[in-house]
Length: 395
Image (cartoon, rainbow, N blue to C red):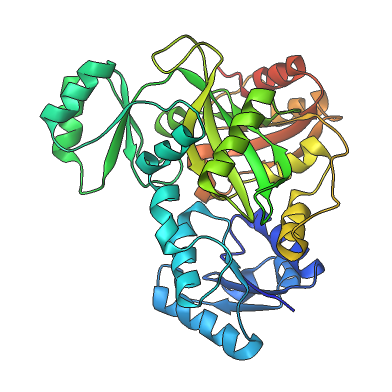
């Protein structure tokens, strides 16, 4: 029996599904987390063969000892994964130290964590990339801004999500940022006027896609975080051919195997230096599933179970799980404190045949995904857009 160590299986809270499907496939599922066992959900408790609580997942020695304990009790560890961007480097170090051959190792991290390093692989895949500059001093950074024009986007070269991301509009703002920044390595990129489109894939050990889908973020996640805004996104009903082709080329360029990945692209809103209107160009790669509730949205859109497909990939390197439908699954989330035109009761009455879920967004995710969400399925983009208006219009 294979031993699978799942790091932080309780967060996000839908990740118990990954553990459950692994256990159903006959694996020993061994969880390590900092949540007290009694506070785990019943679903998660039933999905784990054993759980080891540490005082903090930030404490490497404690997590190391947890893995050593599991080896002493169950034998060699075959897999270790968190499916979480925050822990990718920690996962890699643990694989190094315990000689776990599956998954990324520390030597791979620069290429999949540093936004500047990712660009070389997008280029190998033939996907255009934004011009960039690693911030060093004001003079060099200002020269780059004169070349590409303001505004520019500044973010940590090794960062998670849209946190600590800034739109800088002039020399004064640039100088203020440089004068007050810490020692973090920041990348500065030309501003791309575009819609974010993703290519999401579960890929087997041969680099072959077992499942493909994608989401669209009509408004910028950076703006959601920085402007305390509402959130909207949707899983598309079908992948456009250009996005699928470029997603597969990026998979091959990075040599991705045995993973669930979330690759981000820009679809240009107008002709720009990087390409023509509607062209698909590079944003960044994430070597883990799309965040938050997105995997469950993929299930609703496709009439499938991506948690099962991923666990089948781990256990069997293949799956028989397919798609039963092709719809849009829509996520619209309200920020607390706004006066919305329609009450939750009115939304429920209008969309009782479409709604899949509603409720509070986990506090740790609400910065990017707002506070109270409605999730629904639709057949057409006209219905999708009407839903966004009905849920998010405010006065």
